[in-house]
Image (cartoon, rainbow, N blue to C red; front, side):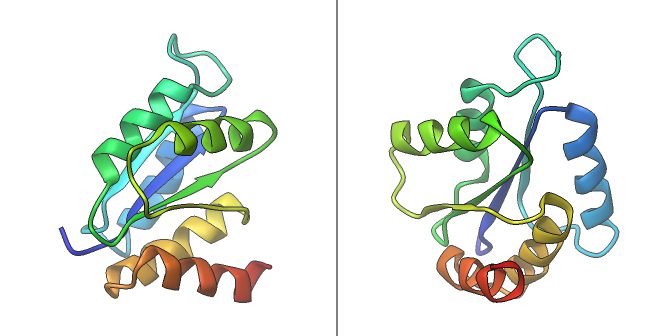
Length: 124
């Protein structure tokens, strides 16, 4: 895998599924993993789901986490702290627009650091 992985974190499974569907219209190759909802399918977030998504999305170019609201950021930070990987970034950007831009950049072969810089320029 030569593309940066992307993890979409939301309180709702439907939100992250919809964003992934949108991205797949323009790029079908970028590794995108979803961590939407709680472990039992309710509204909320799950550290375990985020960790599993990080494991599945990880590549030598890194993993970028994009979240929606509130505790999603806190759980993303905890999952990163518990991860064994070095190249993980959390992007504080609008989830739909940020994920779209990140997927385009990942598709161009950019690293997680390069994508994060682009997101800061566009949304920071």
